[in-house]
Image (tube, rainbow, N blue to C red):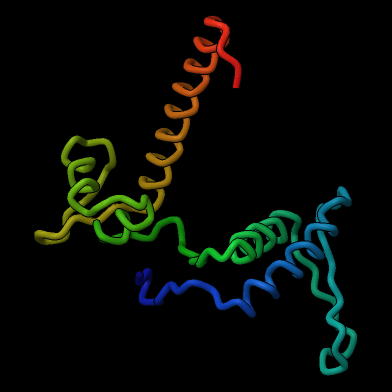
Length: 153
């Protein structure tokens, strides 16, 4: 899949292994309740330079490493990015015709550039959040009904 001109590929075994180690080590640094986190590269070329990141940015890096450690490809996109219908369908892991039906049912906002539909990443993410919330609500209702009827899991 291509997003923003870059090919997204599954990470190699070597990258997965490195990501597992880095995610574990970096996650340990998150146990401290500090607004910034500093790391010191263990390399003489850096001359003892210190790299300081905000906690929010560091958490983002740890999240990315976590996905890579699971063998998932990762892409970084600006939130204002506009996606083709195929790119958006790939992100949702649905077929393009199914995705276009979601657009036609006005479940996700889109614009037209000539005859082509474009979806803002923010609108796609909002749909994903809403869909996940609805699914969770339905699961909670089913769980409650099952418990009322005495079913155990």
